[in-house]
Image (cartoon, rainbow, N blue to C red; front, top):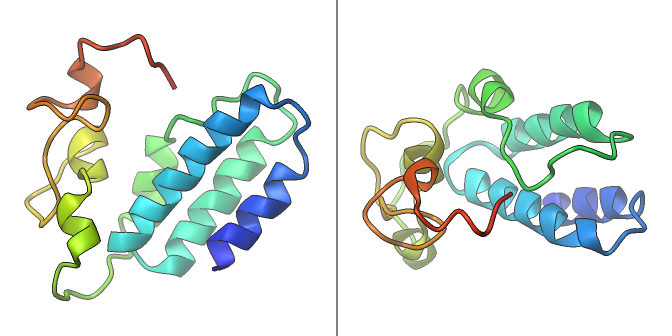
Length: 128
């Protein structure tokens, strides 16, 4: 719930509809992170990204700041639990962008759902 409220607050700063898709991508990344990491760490990451990107019209909201993510989020995993149905269908963000030692999510490209990482995806027509 707090992620939606935070997103709503940020969306209020933007008037251009073209940025909405990128903001929704950013929200999607936050939701994926919240499956595996503590909500407080995901919110801290979100605040750090906002501090770096708000006011910058060239900011790429649809992209992930892997340096901030490594520094803030990866240090706060959620305690182990049974995988949910949603997570079993979700592509693994860590596998696509960083390194995943193994989890219950799908290790496929988040863009085309084939057997390679998103950085190696031949379908580069949909950029962040």
